[in-house]
Amino acid sequence: MGSLPPSLSSLLFLNLALILISVSPVISTSRQALDDHQDQLMKTGFKITMNNVDSGGSFTERLLRATKRSNRRLQHFNEIISKAKHPNFRSAVYPADGAYFMNFSIGTPPNSYYGIMDTGSDLIWTQCKPCFQCFSQPAPVFEPKQSSTYSNLSCSSNLCQDLESYCNDGCEYIYGYGGGTIIIGYLATETFTIGGVSLLNIGFGCTVFTYDGQGFGDGLVGLGRGPLSLISQLGEPKFSYCLTYWEGTKPSTLVVGPQPSVNSSSGVKTTPLLQNPFNPTFYYVSLEGITIGGTKLPINKTTFALNADGSGGVIVDSGTTFTFLELSAYILVREEFISQVQLPVVNASDSTGLDLCFKLPSDPFSVNIPSLVLQFEDALLDFPTENYIVANSSIACLAMVPSLGLSIFGNILQQNMLLLYDISKETLSFMSTECDKF
Ligand SMILES: *[C@@H]1O[C@H](CO)[C@@H](O)[C@H](O)[C@H]1NC(C)=O
Ligand SMILES: *[C@@H]1O[C@H](CO)[C@@H](O)[C@H](O)[C@H]1NC(C)=O
Ligand SMILES: *[C@@H]1O[C@H](CO)[C@@H](O)[C@H](O)[C@H]1NC(C)=O
Ligand SMILES: *[C@@H]1O[C@H](CO)[C@@H](O)[C@H](O)[C@H]1NC(C)=O
Ligand SMILES: *[C@@H]1O[C@H](CO)[C@@H](O)[C@H](O)[C@H]1NC(C)=O
Ligand SMILES: *[C@@H]1O[C@H](CO)[C@@H](O)[C@H](O)[C@H]1NC(C)=O
Image 1 (tube, helix red, strand yellow):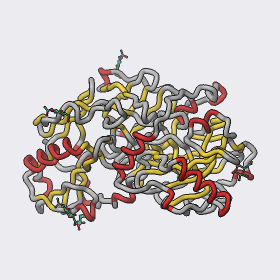
Image 2 (cartoon, rainbow, N blue to C red; image 1 turned 90 degrees about the vertical axis):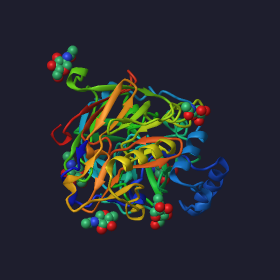
Image 3 (cartoon, rainbow, N blue to C red; image 1 turned 180 degrees about the vertical axis):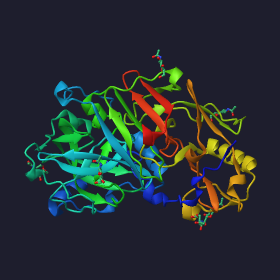
Image 4 (cartoon, helix red, strand yellow; image 1 turned 90 degrees about the horizontal axis):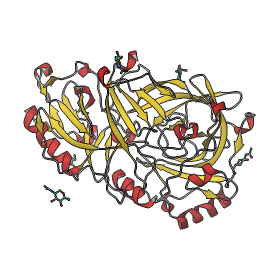
């Protein structure tokens, strides 16, 4: 049992719609819709009607459809890997609006941007001029004509083939994010500068049309495991990050390339990474059980399994705020918290987007919140209270919500842990760390 975190006074709630950006890229159009869309592009510039886009249903339903539909081959992209890229760098990562942001520069001379760091998607993108419909972003919109290192990617390029693209003039994409944002643009290559290191010929998306795009800063850096991500393009087998407290302002670090050596005697827990051929982007882990306040929940072994048809499973995602648990497990978690916390349950779902909230007594320090332990294959992780309970001075809510099929290990749950992804060994290591000091 732990007590509530002392940081209760700050208001910790955000609107769910605002913060469930960047869950996964969903290529949310059929071929026919793309053809229609392309006709429209040619006639009217980058204007689309939303009817063309299969954006119905809850975000979880969209994820499930995307998983089933995107029957992509798992392709390993090797050609762009070159020693000339010096792919070792460290970059600061900042929490904001339920996401984590990083600095990067594009072009020659370099233009500075500040976008979401997302392990749940692959494409790296920013908005480019001329922009047909763009959201307002903090930095000036990138102007390809002003950069000497810019070039468009042809349809025959490997990266273009890896993208589910529509090819005509250039390699065009439509990308959707859970939460309803849709971006349209074309692929190009540029020099990126991250953490002071120049990375040559990085394929990225020049976005020229957005629908509902607020909350992305100046764009996004995809760190997924698909071919278009920064990690895959660099061919770097290892990266790590450490997320600071989500409501704070202190930066932490993303490290790509050689890592500090970690081993079990330094408190490191390591679990295998799993792959889903139906969705090569995601980092899947196997979750085997949940223990709350010492009580192991009777969760069916099949609940979190990654199924042969690509459904189910548990992914680790820096771009999703809350943790999503498959409904049948969520129900058990909810019941267990209710029986152990012993405070009145209040329905605050409208204002918090969260399903389970408790009314706090006037002395919140007298409240006992049960411990949470997640049993991953070979790694038993227990979490600080602030990783799964968000609170203000009147209510405390479980930072977990139910989903159907796919479960997501969100970024609040990842706070103050070093997460080291070793893609060549297919492992993910966790080490409890004060990330603002890392
Ligand atoms: C990153 O960008 C933000 C916003 O532009 C800026 O305030 C911050 O100083 C930058 N950090 C670094 C390390 O360049
Ligand atoms: C790149 O492609 C876009 C879209 O087809 C086009 O508008 C732009 O002029 C091209 N830029 C260059 C430098 O070829
Ligand atoms: C493991 O880590 C500890 C603490 O960082 C260090 O003292 C020890 O030498 C390491 N052991 C191995 C085998 O690397
Ligand atoms: C676990 O779930 C599977 C599939 O839903 C079901 O067939 C099985 O009976 C369940 N097992 C238990 C012990 O509930
Ligand atoms: C909470 O309130 C919302 C609307 O205010 C309602 O839709 C929802 O069903 C309620 N939840 C519970 C568990 O009663
Ligand atoms: C705490 O958050 C709830 C839900 O957003 C809100 O109704 C309540 O007024 C907040 N309490 C304080 C003291 O800010």
